[in-house]
Image 1 (tube, protein in one colour):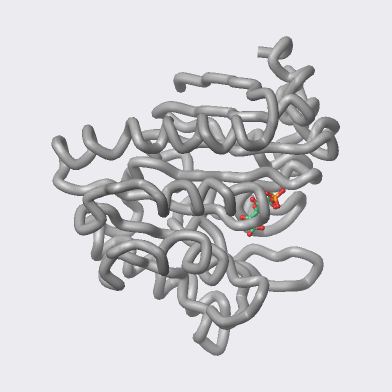
Image 2: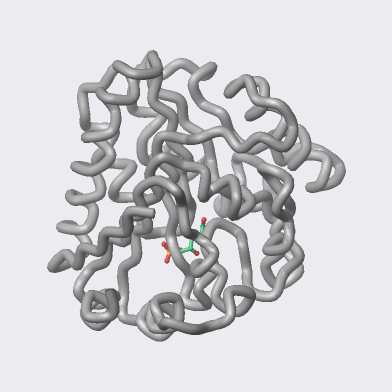
Length: 242
Ligand SMILES: O=C(O)[C@H](O)[C@@H](O)[C@H](O)[C@H](O)COP(=O)(O)O
């Protein structure tokens, strides 16, 4: 694992650095594999990043967008990660619907939707069950409880290691989420973390010893690149804990 930590002065600088990093991955991916694949995170931090990506002139026909987690609500619901990304980015660019791969939230049971998305991923990446395809970029945020994607502390999702997608749970509300082994298969994982309120969780995530079930972001140890991008408010102390 190649871990890099950068503390940017403020949130706009954090967004610009994340944009720069993502853009740097697009052309090489297309040259080597004919496409660029990215999984998005939800929450509030990445919204300005998605708005910035929408302003870029990119080969949209070669770019495929997935989600690393989703609230189990309709795509029109205000909490939908898909809705946020469409409004901030995807509705503003000439990208085909066939390049947009939202997590389905229309099955009677979230577990059925998890299987459906996993099968979609397996077909897209042409892998068999048990294989973990590599996304070019997996974007992640981190909650102030050290969750990432929808891998929340002390939940069953943390124990799922043989699937690509599983059911997360936040305060009794179902979510769909990539499993941590699938996230770790990515060529490049980028955490975007901003705000003073994330400091206590970050201290535990970067501590030499701490419980991963309590601080799930500790589980993210990809074979490829791991980037932690912070604003000053979140990351001022972490930089010394490398
Ligand atoms: O669906 C979600 O909410 C996200 O995927 C979640 O994991 C998010 O990244 C963190 O909760 C951080 O959220 P903020 O960026 O809003 O702090």
